[in-house]
Length: 193
Image: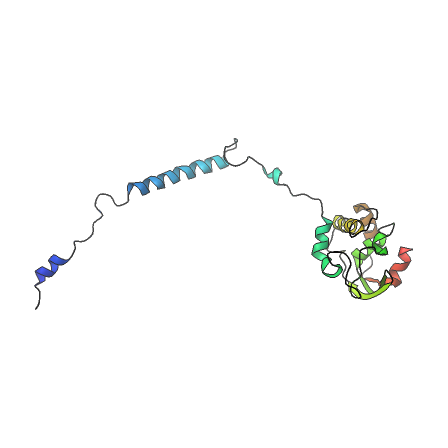
């Protein structure tokens, strides 16, 4: 039984038509409101007069502190070997806690070690270590070496006097021609006495 073509067309729904409201009025109202808000926000953001938006800080309010943190330098560069407590690893990496190299009256040897590094045998608290410490002279500024040295001299139970960047600059200049790391006790012990 075949249906007639006319009956088939009658069963079909009419083509959808947008009619008089292609977009609901609520959606148009929301879009218009967002455009007005965006225009006001941009105007207020670039208006030189104080605005109720934001907290009215200027670029100078976000200036970065130039003070160097020795603890951060230690954590980023030294803690893997000398450990967080400054006691090193027995027989492998020397301790900084109570070490004569760190607690000397003058920080010259400690600064020289940080600047140029060490290789070969080094005796710390009666125990001999034979390893290599990298140099940081080309990586750290005088202020950073000062901050690190002062951190080491005042942490882990150490209580040695602090130093300043001018003193570090003097030691850096005195050793400017040195290209190799210090040869452990052989080079450093005479400097300590």
